[in-house]
Image 1 (cartoon, rainbow, N blue to C red):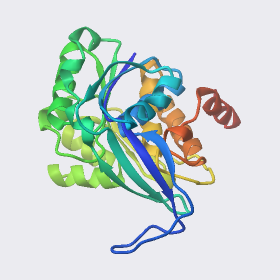
Image 2 (image 1 turned 45 degrees about the vertical axis):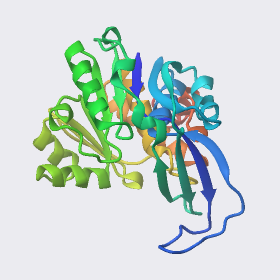
Image 3 (image 1 turned 180 degrees about the vertical axis):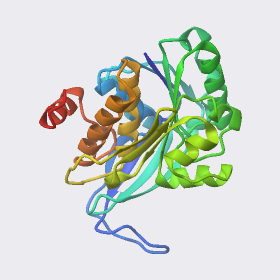
Image 4 (image 1 turned 90 degrees about the vertical axis):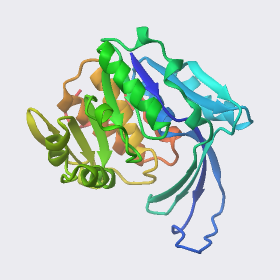
Length: 298
């Protein structure tokens, strides 16, 4: 089982011809509203890939809450550990240009009130994969990681954004997933190169650095692995990183070797880039299976 402790947002998506520069207003034709948030995106991606997922987080006592949970419910994610807080539901404004590049502003809202004690110790045991990100209170996230480590659960951390999570908690994760910019930020913090190999050497944690169209690099005690990107016509990259992390967690949770889990996540993230939206762009397991068979892999 995957237990995801993370953020839940409602995304306001603005397709634009170009991304606005400082002080500039760019007009678009229409706006879409879609569930989002890194935690919810990753949970939905894992569930769509076939994992059993339990979510712990917080939404507000407002009209956005039900809309923000729609795709999690549709994907079969268990929401019994999601609480309603007396504050606004998390919300993101996402600008996407014609090449699929994006700029994102987030109001965290209820996400900052998600608490580790929403999850009982009995769930943080061997056989559980804890999936966490950087969009909830860092102290609560660190507590979840420590409790999961004590209970024998696997921990997958997507440190996005690259916030200053407590060093002891960071060193206790099994897999650290970050993009290039986040890797550079973490590297500066620890006086290391921002590459997967540099961060693994500094932290002693298996590290995966995603590089968009340049593929990915992973470093573990077995060595360094590089994997090219799966080719696709890019429409929208908004949820690609979350798709990758969720599908990676799903693969690891069901016992795939790291290389195979990375390959599956790599292909799923590429498929995600081929569709517009956030959670609405996440592929089903069957879609990823078809793409893998097209590469001669099941």
